Length: 548
Image (cartoon, rainbow, N blue to C red; front, side):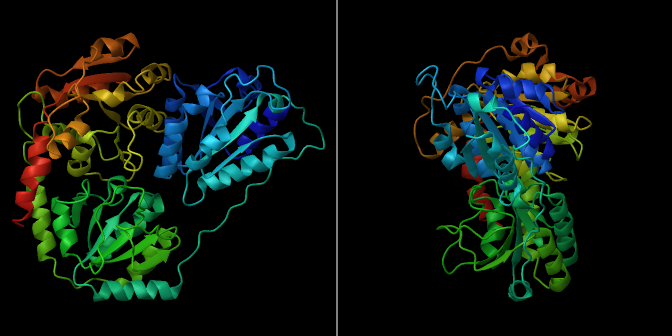
């Protein structure tokens, strides 16, 4: 047994079942140890795809996903996904190789200080310099990656250390300890209850940190028993069924949307599971509404978020105690009901529009009709993300996977692939812009090779649509953001997938349904008409909001 074997044994001890990656020559001892182990290797076509898959595994399971890359360019290709996991609070472990550190064979060829590079992007990063350190460093890495607030960790295994022999004096793997989350004190809960009872217009905000099974149950009980109205951040969608009569929608924008009428009227926001890395759903002002911060950890204070009260501890336990003590709220719900009515009417606009290219409102509505409540849509980053965040009503947690922290392009396809691998019985739809799709489109080969059942939707406007929208809003001419695309149907078929091109809006829902029924990997090229981006998301909303 050598150090690489011991490393794999330590990973097995942590319950690791799969590693995603692109190995290099400096990983060959590790790769051989992996071959002999119970852990499955998923070979991807780019390190970024491997890390996005690992991060999604962590996001959905709460256990650190593990990815592998070599030194130099392999390690630098992990950087974006490291930031994705760190900002999104997804537990992930990255393992990279390195040239021998005890003797140099090739000078500084390919040498990058990967540990220093990963420092600002991870909770923990170390180079392994001794076989005896492997068990403790693996245990510490997993502890940090998975404890609240979760995130990314990194270990570098040099080639010569990986080959070091293990003997009877080598440190064995460590038993896994299980800590207990802190519990908010009775005084803190009592003060929160008092603030809620004193408020005339309390609102509940559900963020990404609440997207957990136990928290969902507690929040559903709180909404039902108290009668409180609620809204969500983009990454909090689905924790409580958004078809609820008390749901006021998703804060897809930071201001000037229907939900902000309700936020402006509220005198107290109970903010559950949100932190400042996610785009602000609203901006706090001095002398304005009060905010109760309910989370696993204390609030990170900045100029737009400075809560007056904090309930820190296990969220599910805190919400359950609040539910018991708050009881049924006596509040005037007339204004919130009017906001919900106007929002509901707005979300129905153009959902049956037969014009072509397809309108985003029709696109979202048809996707929702085809997807069951447990179906998962995984979105890349683009202006369509705002349309889906606002218009797609999620019924269950983790059924709308999007990135509202780093907001990177290129993550949508690998993320959807991991969902399809983990949950093969569910319908999974990857939703990408034409720009973001091509950033990791090579992973179509991985999806086909793995035998996944996955539909990939490309929203095709031949431009970087989100930036064009912002460009328009700032009053600049339309410049520098248009491009040409390949034939996506032929591109998909070259990988062994099935390609389809939408020619009328009315055929979209039947085509999407047929792809799911057929199984396998399908790609849909869907031309979109984004002219309503400017009208609905900027001009028209400001006028309508004032009428509520």
